[in-house]
Amino acid sequence: MVPPMRSGCACCSFTRRQVLAAGCTACVGAAGVLTTPSRARAAQDNSKVRVRIIYSLHAPRQPRPDWPNIGFDFQPHMERIAAELRQRCPNIEFVTSTAKGPEEAAKILEQDKSAAIDGYLVYQMNCWNRVVQTIAESGKPTLYADFQYGGSGGFLVYTAGFLRSQTANVGYVASSRIEDLAAAARCFEMVKRGATPAEFATAVARIRKERTPAPGDLKGKPDQLSSLSPSECLARMKESRILAIAKGRDGLGEAIHREMGIDVRDVPFEELNAAWEAADKDEARAIVDRWQKSAAKIADVSRETLEQSAAMYLAEKALLKKYGANAITINCLGGFYGKHIQAYPCLGFHELLNEGLIGACEADTRSTATMVAMTALTQGRPGFISDPVIDTAHRQIIYAHCVASNRAFGPKGQTNPFQILTHSEDRQGASVRSLLPLGYMTTTVEFGPDRKVILFHQGKAVANVDDDRACRTKLAAEPVGDIEKLFREWDQWGWHRVTYYGDLKEPVFALADAMGWKVLEEA
Image 1 (cartoon, rainbow, N blue to C red):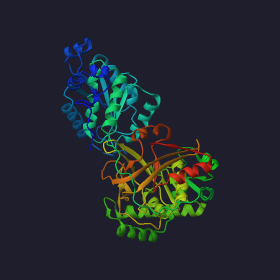
Image 2 (image 1 turned 135 degrees about the horizontal axis):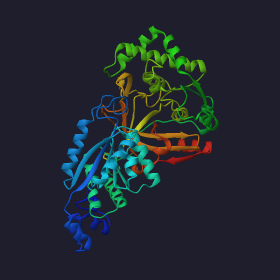
Image 3 (image 1 turned 90 degrees about the vertical axis):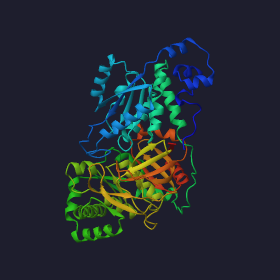
Image 4 (image 1 turned 60 degrees about the vertical axis):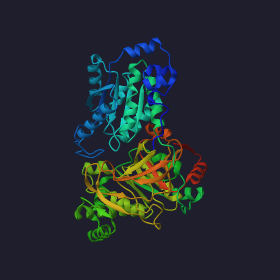
């Protein structure tokens, strides 16, 4: 439920000076403002505000694998957004453009020098297109919006960068409700009446906070969690080994070994592929038989693909045994798209996680080391590595990825339903949608061995989001603390986070103390 506004126009419920600048009749009347020169000028100026919407994306129909997915048709969504904004913001004239990157964004700015554009709304439709940075450099009021499950990674990382650099002219919206976007867009009217770009951005922040629901009941269900002592956990970490297939993407192997005691071993694609080819075909078929019986749903995935995925699981197990390792992370996207591997590792990782081992995505050695530490600390609970999305409309952070366990409480814990679907971004292979348990407290972390810091926040699991866009498993949690703070660290830590079931605040802080590290609370 959205809290009531302080007045009829949210972006005008501000200081007296900004009320005057906004020219909002409802607010001016409520404030009892006398006629002033600035008010007289506002009354005389009846022209509409001109705002250019720039959709930041690869193309109107997505040509390659990426969030939301290959072949995604943005055109109906762009038309709907523009139509809704025109209806909800009658005093604003919206014009629209698309841009792939900074070059096209610069051309738009050059053309707009003679177009009387008052401000920009940049909509991040795909994750990593760098458009908003160029537009923000114009100095004009810029409203930055996330097309959720499409542009969320770039939106979070780029927004954190703006907050860190204190870019004064950028306001942002991270809401699934078009009403919230329209309420923020109406702040452009302030600029037409004389407000500065910084005042515009401040007004957008005020609206975002006012329209974010208050915290709900954050008490989690009872959870019989048993954690190791810090000394026992550190001993387990020193006995651990990570296999990084096609090298870790973050170059943290040495720091992980030095600061966490975990050995990291680089293994080439060729060795994984050879193990896949050598996998026992009868054993792979038996695994598929079990998946077909236990999965709640299998859609658009052939028996052949399932057998290839089962063989990949057996290959992962073979390499873990060969190297005496308990964790493996694979450059899955680069390997599959580059044809270095013939099957996605998602189902294999699902199996490993259910067994108390570690299967981690995208050769992300930092997240893999995080999972090694936390699975040891929780005596076998699996981590859920994810690409999060923040939705202020429901006061939620949604953890999204195509790999997840269905034994959130450990190998001997209860199971939850899971589905086998294609990998989301390219609609190929096989991946997992796990319908994870709700009502429990979760703890989300990233270990930073290069900075001796553990990034930390908690949230109560409240929903399994069913949306065809982006990664298959989407666990929504209501964060404990200040959701506004959750926008601030993505540029420093990247997009991935690792989530565990359980209230692990005390064990994590105790482990950090034993390691001589600090804990940075995101929320």
